Amino acid sequence: MNKMRFLAIYLVASLLSAPLVFAQDLSKYRNFSLGMSLTAVSNQVDAKPADASVIQQSPTLIQELRSWPEQSYQTSAPPQSVQDILFSFYNGQLYKVAVTYDSAATQGLTSADMVRVFSATYGAATLPVAEKNPTAMIPYSVTEEDTVASWENSQDSVTLSRSPLSNAFQLVMFSKKVNGQADVAIASAVRQEREDAPQREAARVKKEADDHETTRQTNLKAFRP
Image (tube, rainbow, N blue to C red; front, side):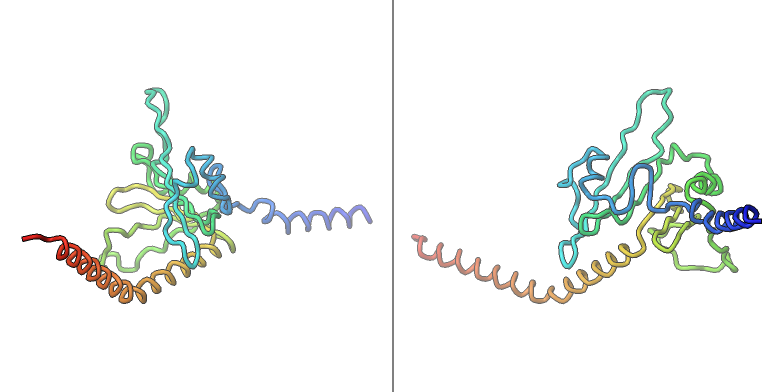
């Protein structure tokens, strides 16, 4: 009886823990993981931390590093699937990865094909709900991308999209918490930039006038008719 009871408890515990054991990790892309340092990412893509662009320094340091994987010129080698990867860092920690895939490597692949490929890594995908009235005239932005599928959990999000212009596929992965913090920091910096603009313009105009007057006085003293 004790053995049967133990077996039953074990089976129930296994079933309850199965979702955790087989839960997909949405914080990893190839050898990169959200939370990695700028130095660690730079080492993997054969770059230097100094190569990262500073998007803003205050109130939070936000940087970006773009990598273009080398293409193989051997005819027997398959084309490199990745065109470029944009890494975003919040105070030196990786919080977002945006991967754009090479059109030659994805030529002929449908959105369903790509969803199946990524679902093998990230699990069951959530597909966008079809528009109720697809023929309706909707304002369209040339920078807008069509969402193909998404994966998410309480911490991270992964979205596969396709450009309606170039047909290129893009995968974007980010930490929900840090991405939210980055958005707030960027918005705060933009707001501060807007508020400081009049004062900076006034300072620029004054400096220009002062420089002009200095040049005038210098030339006036040195000029000989």
